[in-house]
Image 1 (cartoon, protein in one colour):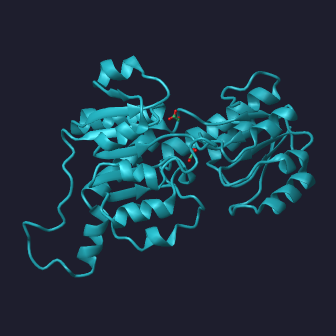
Image 2: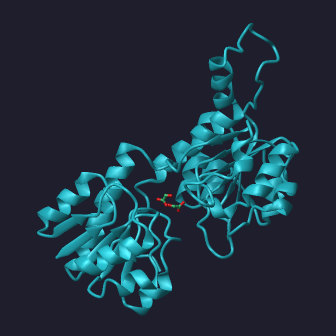
Image 3: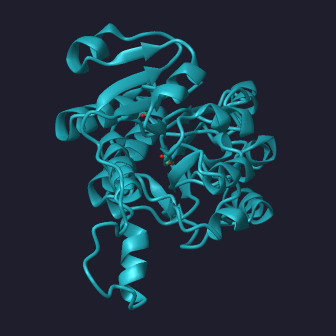
Length: 320
Ligand code: GLV
Ligand code: GLV
C-alpha cells in the first residue's frame, strides 16, 4: 500500500514499512503549508499517512485522502488532529506514547537544573567577558534537596520526572491530577493535591505534563501565576498553549517566579517577544523528545501502527 510521510523522520521506520512491502513517499525536509499538504495528498491519494505535530490534520485533510485508513501521529500529543472528523470518517489515529517518556522526563530535569542554577545566564555572562572575580554573591540559584516539585498532570512523563528528581536530587514530590495514584505515594512518598492552586502555592518548582485540550488551554493564566510561591520555578515541556505567555512574562518580571524554562510555545516557531526580552527564561526549541533513541523508537512505533492497520489488525496505540 501507499504511505505518505509529511516530512523526513528517522529512517528505521521507513525501512520497516518498505520491508513489509509498502511504498513510502516522504514529502520533504521542510514543513508543508496546510494548502500544500492537501494538494500533495490529493495528488498521491495514500492509504496511510504519518503526520507530525506541526501538521494541522483536520476535516479538509481527511477529505483529501479518501483511501486513508490510518493517520499515525509522530508524537505522543495529538492536539493537532481533529479526532471527531477522523472518527466520522472511520479513520484510525495513533500516537507514539511510552518510547519518549524517558527523553522528555530527562529534558525536563535538564531544564529544571538550567533554570535553578542559572546555567544559560551564567554562560552568557562569561562569554560577555563579565567574569572578573570569584564572588560569594555571584549568580546564586536554588538548591533542590528538600524542596517541593509540584507536578501538574502525573501520567507517564510526570511520574518519570518525579522518580528522577526524588531519587536523584532528594526533592519532595507533590502532584495534581484528576485522581490520586496510591503507587506514587508508596514509591516516592508523593503527596496528592486535589486542588491545583494548593499545589502551586506549596511548590518550589512546578512542571506541567498535561495534554492540550479545551480545559487546559491557558490553564496557567494571570490568576494561576498569582497563586504560585514567590521565587518559584515554572517549567513547561507539554504544550505552549497551556500557558498564557503574556501572564507568564509578567510573573517573571514582578518576581512571583524567579525563573521559567520552556520547551514549547503557543505559536511555534514564534516565541513571545516579552519572553525573549527576559534573562530569567531558559528556552529550547521543542526538543524534549529529541534523543536519537526516542526519535528512532517513535519512527518504529508509527510504522508498527501502520503495518497493523493496513494488515487489517487493530492499531497498537489508537487514540480517541
Ligand atoms: C512532542 O511534543 C510530542 O507530543 O511527542
Ligand atoms: C505521556 O506519555 C504521559 O502519559 O505523560
